[in-house]
Every structure is written in C-alpha cells, then in structure tokens.
Image (tube, rainbow, N blue to C red; front, side, top):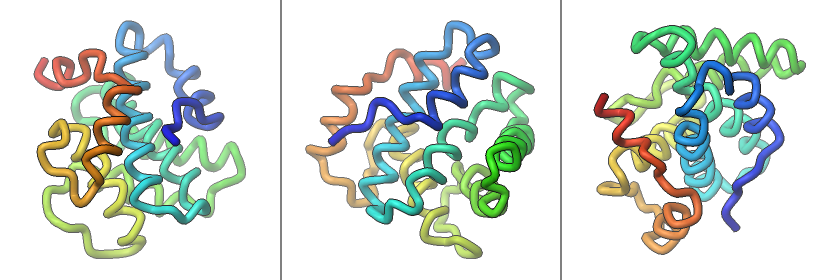
Length: 157
C-alpha cells in the first residue's frame, strides 16, 4: 500500500506552505516518495514516524535558508521534536537528515535507519537508476502514484 497521507508529514509541511510557495507540491511529493521507500526497506513500524519527520524536514532548509541547508533543516526538525515531546529522537533524526546525501555507506550511530533513509533519498534523486534492492514494481507503482511534478528540474536550477 502506497502512503499518500501521513499526519506528521502533512502537519509539518502545512507549516511551511508559505515559504515553499509554488514548490509545495513538488517537495511534498518528494517527501512522500522517500517516505514510502523507507517504510518498504524497514518494516519496523517503530521507525516509520522518524522517517516521516526526517523526510518532511530533510530539505526544508533550502527554502527557509539557502543551499547551505543541512544545519537549518536539522535545527527545525530538532525544534519540532522538542515541541512534540519526541526529543529522544533528536540525535537519530539529525543523523538521518545530515547523512541523506552521503554517497558511501554510513557507519555510526543508528546505522540501520540512517542507511534506509540515505538510500531512500538517493533512489528518488537519481530517479531509480540505482534502487538498492527496491523491487522494480514497487518503485514504478510509487512513481506512478506520487508523480515527480518537476522535482528534478528544481534540483537542476
């Protein structure tokens, strides 16, 4: 089942709708694609909310700050986690965000979830050229249901 609505993702993104402007749907779709890849890779439901929060915040600093966005994205996620009583997840979510563009395998604290999130973002950024073992039919189903809507054109700008 492909997830197209998640309470945490939607609440977070609605708070940034004004800053995302015309990119709101583009970013929302990117967030949902990587969230879906992550929960396919990791069936442990106790991690799904962490992926949702990290996905919603992982690139948000591009719009709130600039292309030097990782620290601002981490800070916004950390503030959200504190505000929602999930401050115990701060280090893990920070690592998910901080390492999501890492090319090589991540080795360190929270390696399983960091690796799942890293692979999930890379799958979307490189349009499935490498899928890290993700089933082709699942990849295509997610792409068809949560379409790109110009995300890769945004990356080129």
